[in-house]
Length: 79
Image 1 (cartoon, rainbow, N blue to C red):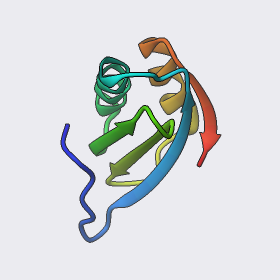
Image 2 (tube, rainbow, N blue to C red; image 1 turned 180 degrees about the vertical axis):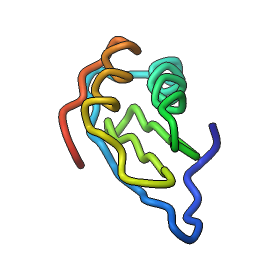
Image 3 (cartoon, helix red, strand yellow; image 1 turned 90 degrees about the horizontal axis):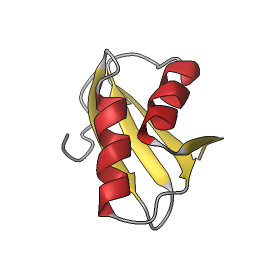
Image 4 (tube, rainbow, N blue to C red; image 1 turned 90 degrees about the vertical axis):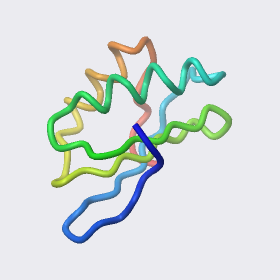
């Protein structure tokens, strides 16, 4: 997906993900999180370990955790 954009009614959440070290890692995490219903954009930054997610409503943290696990990384929590 593309860089986060704020639109009326959207929710922006920043998560910390451990283990990302390159662009491929960013793409894997972004791809999995973007599959969660309601997610409109995802931006992962390996250098900071932060993943910014914009969604239409607050996301279930367990859904985000499962997506990050599926990508092969660990959700450390909110940034």
